Image (cartoon, rainbow, N blue to C red):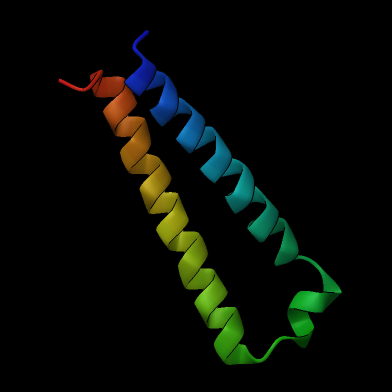
Length: 65
């Protein structure tokens, strides 16, 4: 495995961990206390993180070809 591929794998793993923490936050009482506008921003952030993770997955599956 190349260093570059390992870095992409690490990036995806870290992104997925952060996204999981954000999605867990959605289930907390603190989430319900946030203004709707902030909830919307955080939900959009989660969607963007999911899309980014998918792109990294595709790159890894394609083996950078």
